[in-house]
Image 1 (cartoon, rainbow, N blue to C red):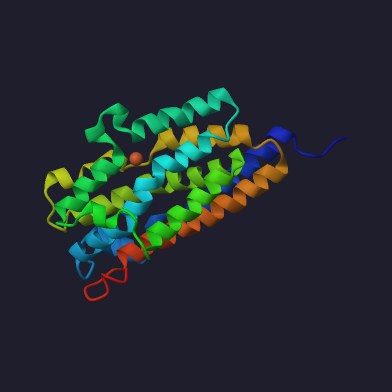
Image 2: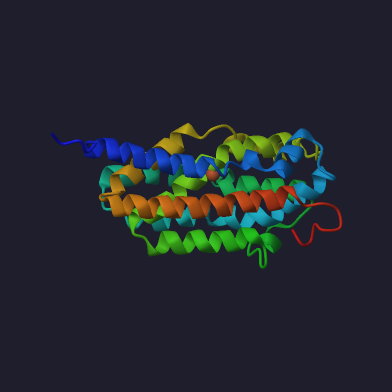
Length: 239
Ligand SMILES: [Fe+2]
């Protein structure tokens, strides 16, 4: 009698492991981020400025990650899901609703100049963006999708925490739109990415590679937000 689990059972186990490894780096595990969300950071304003400086380069490049991932996808149905995500990132083609534009409203609400922050030279955000860009450009599809899935799974709950924390930074309402749009578990995007990832992982080697990339990117994303939330007066320019 064959005692091996059926292949679809193995696949489920593999994808559960990918979810577990990503969620083990949930941004809410950061004590600094929880402190910021409660309004107990040494300076909520300094953390908000750190968020603007560190995250803008990553936010600016997110659509380009998606576009690069799409370029590797030969499965048309799976590709459609990412195209829909890219369309949303572009504000459903309304230039005033493009997601980086929503983030620029946050940057301006802090009195900072988005143009000066776009490259983000020397920031962990720019470094993280460069790593994700390299993964998404190099492909193949399962590696690019594993990176994007990790980001999508972690980002919605992270935005919830940042939204709570930013309430203590004295920002005008128009500066908060980006966080309202992205807050909450992004169930739709995460499940779309998961569907694409499952379809792109054709072998157990692909699934193991996807697990490794998801672990790397989740860890990098966690460290980025832990660093942002740890900013304090006097260290803001370093963060
Ligand atoms: Fe977005």
